Each structure stands twice: as structure tokens, then as C-alpha cells.
Image 1 (spheres, rainbow, N blue to C red):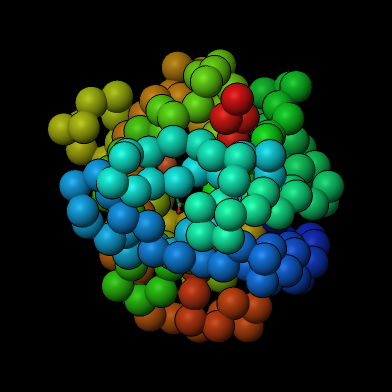
Image 2 (tube, protein in one colour; image 1 turned 90 degrees about the vertical axis):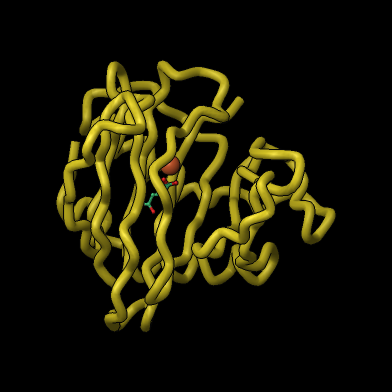
Length: 194
Ligand code: SIN
Ligand code: FE2
């Protein structure tokens, strides 16, 4: 479900919270098991955070960059994730992880499934901020041709139930400018990881 503009009220507070998180756990370009460097820079907040390195993908309670816990998920962000899930019909969503992705011109995210979480009955809530991007909404098989959906500042996408394991990604981002994020797109994905 696409909730257009759902995150617009409070957007400046969200950006402020992300800046504060990134001062404690900085954005970094993670590597994959195959040795590729991901083009979106990432950090996390919440009890656990998603990490990728030579050992593969997983959730960790400690930020490998700082050796400390990930920054707490601000209540305002946890409530946003909860409210968006509820608006899409998923009650009782209490995220324990929020992956924060930062894209600049040329960044992309190839088609993938979100399958590192423990319980696929819990949805994914994705919040887009800053410059626009084309969301690729695929099928349950990697080869299914994805639908292209433009996501702009404040848009929230929620997927779950029979669509929980749909392939998805972000097409190469084009340069643009937004008053709150300058030349970047910030995406938050709220997840129940454990
Ligand atoms: C993700 O799939 O984790 C991020 C998607 C997005 O940036 O919109
Ligand atoms: Fe994803």
C-alpha cells in the first residue's frame, strides 16, 4: 500500500532525528559477501541493525563500526512506523529495527527480498524523504518484471502478508535537490527483526 505524503507532518523532526542518529552511528557503504560495495550509504537505529559484510547479511545489536549499541529508535519514529502499518491494515506492528539508507545521484538498490527478519507475518514499512526515486516493485520471483512507482518526499510504502517477500529495489537515482535533504534521498525501513 502506498500512503502518499503520510510522513510529511513532522518531516523536519524526522530529519533532525536522523542527523542525530548519524552523529552516533555514521552512514557507511557496506560491502556484500561477494565483495561489492553498496551504493547507498546506511546506518540503523533500534534494538538491532541490518549489516552486510564478507560474512553476509544479518541483524546485529552492536554497530560494527563503533563497537557500541545502535542509537535508540526515537519514539516519534517507532510511532510513525506503527501508525503507517496500522493504516495499511497491519495492527500490532512494533518495529525493533530501522534501517536508514541514503542515496545520492547514481546510487541504486538492486532487486532483493527482505528475508533476514524472523517473522514474515510482520510487514515492512518504508518511508521516503528528500529527492524522488523510482521504486521497483517486483513479484515473488526475481525474473518477474517490476512495476515502477515514483516515490517522493513523505511517501510511505507498506508491504506484508502475501506480498511480504516480493522483490523490490530502487532504480539509479537522478540528481535533484530537496530543501530538507539537499541532494539526497533518505529511506527508512521499519522492521520487526527479532
Ligand atoms: C530497501 O529495500 O531496504 C530500501 C528501499 C528504498 O530505499 O526505498
Ligand atoms: Fe528491501
